[in-house]
Length: 414
Image (cartoon, rainbow, N blue to C red):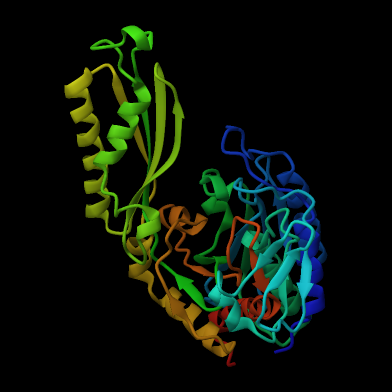
């Protein structure tokens, strides 16, 4: 199956040229208006590719339908990707670099700034010797998360639309805003989308297939101290920052992100701000196992209560809210969807790598909203930072996998 990689790369570069960084501090949906620019562009392209019922709603959700070519009881299949890029690093004025026939040595991203991606620091680079790697110039992230997924879906749609011999049922496509700040599925209209199942094309390296993710919660701790002139502070001062440090020391030091992997959960201190008078701490809590997830939340409450008992009940307050849950319980009853993805990868010459997601996707939320939605690789590495890269060959394989899912769903022989 020949994919036009020049067209695939051109699409990808067009999408990353649009700054769609989301903003967790803004409550609007979408959180940044520039996401509409990409949404409208994608809607126009979907129409050009022959999709029907193409729309962009007031929150920048894009939907479209590729009409079936065969009649009968064929499942309606969906493909999804998100338009925003991470708030962790700028996505403005991305300047992509093409490293053809990578030699397996250091990759120079920005000679002037001395930004070099070294195989000693990123051993995974060695797997891609001889391939074409795409990076930024080191001043921004690349945006493969998730604009590579968008480019792969669009290229697959074009391929299918141009091949009259590929028979398929209805194909639904959706592009969402604000996934990177945990809101991508908040206003997604599952009923209107109308798919029986879907796949987010939002995974990492070649072959990733994921249908388990973290259970997730956010916690905010507010601490009110008592500021007294340090010369007269004995037995009077209560330093809010020190109470925050005391709280953090109560949590298991080995259960932090930097010490955990695979199915291991963690407590992650994401923010600590304040002074003697007032301090705030923010945490995210993660675990694949729901019982362990509840245990972690309970332990944080216990630690806060200990501070309350010692320093006063009004001095420390805790706010906690669940963010999303492990999609496994929703996917397990429909494992044929996962089997379909595995078969499609194998048909595309890709070895499936079934792994738990150490994070979340739109698919996790959507699975709880009634749309089973495993996650498939887009092909990139080192998302959210200046050392993000993606092999063009992995993008090609992701595109082929989407096409094979479409064919297999309709029962078409490979």
